[in-house]
Length: 114
Length: 108
Image 1 (tube, chains in turn green, orange):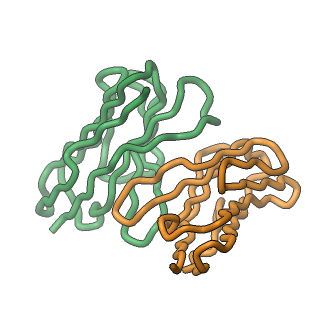
Image 2 (cartoon, chains in turn blue, yellow):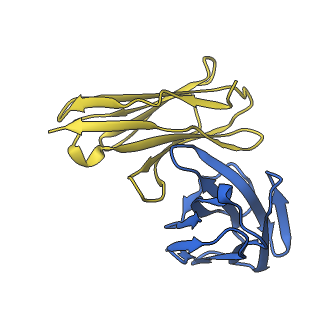
């Protein structure tokens, strides 16, 4: 069966510091991978998605970036965090190919920027 | 107009009752529809998906899709306190869109 991991689970960072969140998927090959952010009391905002190694599509212009160095690894980064970057960051995967498949979420990383 | 709209609630139902959650969407080309359950502080969990008009039943859950009217609903029969959560509607059209969720409380 497929499993998706995210770490760290929680993170408190000062404004202006860098960020690196990691997501890995087990039990599937060539998944579509996604990064979402859920701000307090708000809906899910799609940040990035990837259909393969090195292929990243950005949905929202911001100070975040994403990379996919391996088939089942997805990394979210920032060089300098802003207060507005606080939120619940969720990685998700779906089956290879069509985007019309259901997405499955990891446990998330709760980021607080102070 | 938002791509996916849900009543934010909160919706309260007594234990054992039927909870009805509704969602409308704007993209007529949407092909896939999903319901996720999200407990407070946790990540969303897929509970139902539906692709064709009509009803789809899975245990106590029934998803209903009406593409002509552009709405999808979720019925929860015999509601339990453990069903208390936020329910997110998701629609795939040109992109994957999530609603902001409906908060459901089942009162024992």
